[in-house]
Image (cartoon, rainbow, N blue to C red; front, side):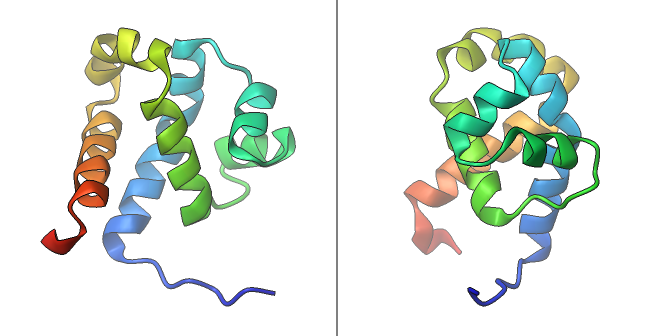
Length: 106
């Protein structure tokens, strides 16, 4: 079993924001739990448990979901509506993208 990764406070906050917004984001771009699960490599049950806050999202799954949304054309087209309802999620995704592209900024 792999060693547990200690998350920073920032990572925990980002995961929490994504967990809160995930059902809305999925529905906005028209993707089911099953479809999202296949795209990010988990089961539909995992997505369901996370959305109902019965299971914590891992950092790895968070990254997979962020990359899925960032690469999804429907997300880009509907980002204006998403930003109005969940500005923190879009902001966190942009910040994460910036940090991943410039890791020396830490």
